[in-house]
Image (cartoon, rainbow, N blue to C red; front, side, top):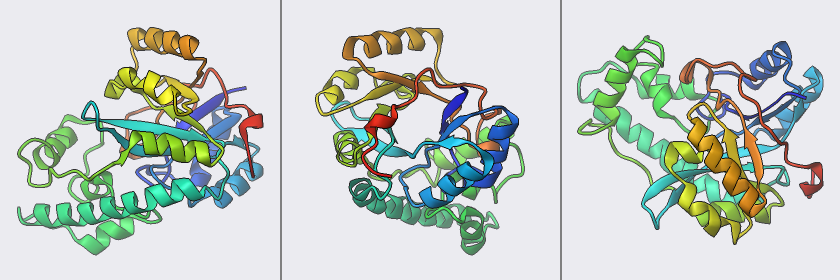
Length: 273
């Protein structure tokens, strides 16, 4: 078994189609995969069909963009093995996708004011089939430099960080609502990359409302993060998951299956296919 449970496609902020991801998974010997696109569950039928076509065991997945309002910081929540119509997840995330898209349109106009020759319609076409435009799609029309290059990072920071004209964020969903929605839809809620966003203090509080796991394997995690995750998982009887957080050309240089999950959410958690 070789499982990567943190992969993104072009249904959110990844550059690859689902079929391209399946082909890469087969090439790298990945047997299990979860495509956890941000805030959407709209593509399961295609993922399931292509998983069967390529012989990859696919697990329903999502990454919800949430916020810890008590500590005033972002926190991402992964959901696995939820019932695939996912009514509670969809109800929570649909307005979030709309806010993200509207904010991206505003960001495009702010950047255009600096005489960047970018076109809203062309960027929207690049973003398809994603339901929302992401910063990566905008950057794709600003620079041809690769995501990991210093030139790319310099432009990104100048526009979207600090005093940048497009530095405006959206209102994210409450992290407790995110966990509850996943649990209500019969799924397993997992705190994503707690080392990246310093989400550790939140774990005990989420356990009380049904948190089922914590992400161990992630490109941003250090040995110290691994130790802390293992300690928390043992203390609260949580699943330890993980993966590459793969975004293709819109992310760091890593291949599907380069990082794998130590545990797979059990099939018996599934309420409905």
